[in-house]
Each structure stands twice: as structure tokens, then as C-alpha cells.
Image (tube, rainbow over all chains, first blue to last red; front, side, top):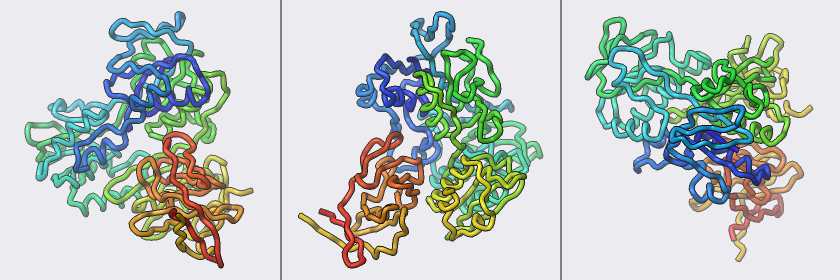
Length: 401
Length: 104
């Protein structure tokens, strides 16, 4: 078995082969030299902790050895021979495979504006270290893009005493996938910390000490960061002539158009049975992990369908936002108010089926209820709106027939 | 050596639920199982030190509110990735309507 990609999905897959009792050879190929590490801390603790950051390893050398997984770090997989069932690495090595798992992830999109080469982007541990070292107190930081990466870095920069401006081309931050009511709370929290958020404004060029906006304004910028989304890394799949559709196209068992090749995580798209087989591509930590587990079982002859409800979180300052399901499919919203100003929006479709939940609060105040709502989404349930709206009600009771 | 301390009344935690309990700088999670027994473990997830009392109890499993790491709270056993280190568990009992735990 060969895994290409040393992120969360690749690491989880390596563990899953052994959890499933597979005793044959497992090779994990990563174009990073570091052993697989966790990415969520890169925008937060790795930037803000007093101590110099260390990677948070998902598989350290001891675990790799005890799992008997061969790690080929700093090795790029450049081509696949589907007939011979081999992967070729950039150094010419050929790895034979019975089944191949592509977990190649996504890469930050690049700005096309003049001066774009000045902009930093965050994906890897080394990016985080570079960004951390640039976030010196009183520096002017311009962040292009009011999405999750941009906003988490903006919060981290504020904690380090920087002057932060976030520039978002859309009319508001978090336009894609986050309800306006939540986005407003996040925006207010940033502003309370002194961050400036400019919306509805494109940039025209990046200069040595500033960013020029399309409306003629200039934003002082010692450091520029681009957080404008990520594109699936599909070059290897493309070379192998695998079907692509907003990423590597998989079926609901995470199998690609080749029966011996599977794909998981940020790099792939798949039909979701809970949402009428809508094709989704998710860039989320838990999705990467859960898909790897399903794919590995299927690579070993199983017939599992991936149907985990999408879920992710974002931490900014003392706030945690969590989104489960597909709020964008909702036609109406029921607000569930919890203690200490925390709340969850329950998104219902036209048939009053719960299709998503999005909540915000301090610490983990919304976690338990979002988790229960996520389970209700997975059960395709049509919960009583009055129960959802009552923050004191026990959502657990709705799960029982 | 046993060192039993009183935590709360039996009605202070719903069945199939969890409560945080802090004592002398240590934090614990106290569980009331669906079959009406009480259990105690360390209060912080072994993965990223998150308070488990904010998590969800389903049957005999506590799920961490941050990354869904799961433990069997009866013995603290980690139930798979992302958690691989067991939780320390403590004996618990009910006496005269009070939940007691033994810090040993």
C-alpha cells in the first residue's frame, strides 16, 4: 500500500491500515521533510505561543516504527503507471502498489496582482515560522482575504501586538458558507481588538511598504499575507489521467476513476449521500481524517460509504465558531440561544429537515449542541423548531426515536 | 491509601451527562452513566488539554468537544485517533446521596 501525502489524511490512513489488521508493507510518501504534523495550530498556537514553535506530530518516529510504516520524506511523487501499478518519485525511484491513496492536499491560491511575490501564504510549518517571525510588535500587517486563514492570522497578529488590516473583496468577511449574523460577531471581535477590516475592496498592487486598493486608498504594510483560498493539488492525478471534478473525482467509497487508486481530504471531491449526492470538496481537518479511515477499509476490500456530516471549527481570540452540515442548503433559520451570548443557528431546508448548524461562543460553549445537531443532520431528521429554539432543551432527546 | 472526597449530590448531574469538578488545582470530569452509576476521570483530554466536561456523553463514551477524541469513561480507555493516551480514572461511589471520588 502506498500513500502519497503526509498531512492529516495521509497520517490517519497509515494508522488505519494497521488498525484494520493489514500486515503488508505501507509506504508514506511526503514532499515535506518533516514527519506528518497537525496543521490547525499553524495559524494560532504556532504564531502566538511564547515558546518557539515545534511541529505537533501526528506520527512521530516512534509511532512510525511501531506501525512499521516506511516514511519517504522530501520525496515528490511525479507520475503513476496505472497498468503496471507503480508510482515514480522525482529521484527516479519506482514504488509498486496494490492500492494507492492520494492525499495530496491543497495549495494556497496566489494573487495575480502586481507585487504579489511579496505576499506570504500559510500552508506548511515553515510558512508558520516565517509568518511568526515577521509578526513583530507594532509592525503593519496587511492580510488579503477575510476567510478563515486570514482571520485566524489576523487574530494571532493582534495578540502579538501588530497593527492589522484585513482586506476583503466581498461585501463582508466569511461570505462563503458563514451566516451574516456570525460574521458580524467575528468582525466586531476583531475591531474590538484594534484590527481594521475593509470589505468590498479589491487590491490593485502591492508595493514595498503598502498595499494599494482599487478605490485609491493605501494600506501601510510591512508584511503582506494572502489568504485567498486554496486549490486542490491534482497534478499527479492529472498526469495519470484520473477523472477530475473540482479536485480528484471520487465515488462515495473514495475510489477514483481507477479501481486501485483512492483519494481523500482536501484534494478530492465526492458525492454526499446525506445531501442528495451533491458533489463536495471539503478542506477540513475531521473530513481528512474520517475519509482516510473509510478509504483504507475499502482499499482492503470493504464496501463502506463515506457519509460523515461535514464539520469544522475556527478559533479567533476567545471565540470558537463551529459549522456542521451544509447551512447553504437551508431555507430558514431557527436560533438557539445558549448561555453567555453563545448561540447556534439551525438551518432547515424547505421540508423542515435540519441540514446544518452554525454556532459561535466563547471557548467550547457551543460544542456539545453543535455535535448533537450534526448527528441530527446525519439522521436527516426534521426536529421540532420549538425544541431547537429552546436553549435549555435537551437535544439528545431528539436523537431517540 | 484511599482519599475519598465529596463531589456533589446525585441529582446534580443528569443521567448520561458529565460535570466538571475542580479540587486543589486539579480538574476532574464526573460522569453519571445511563444505568445510574457514577465515574470519574481526569478532566482534561489527553490530546490537547481541553475540558472534557464540555463534551458529549453517549452511553459510556465521553467525546472531547474540540476534536472528538473518545474515551470510555468507566476506565479512561482511549478509543482511537486522535487520542492515543488513556485518561486516568478514579474510583467513585455514592454515599448518603452524595457522589464521592477516591483520589488515592
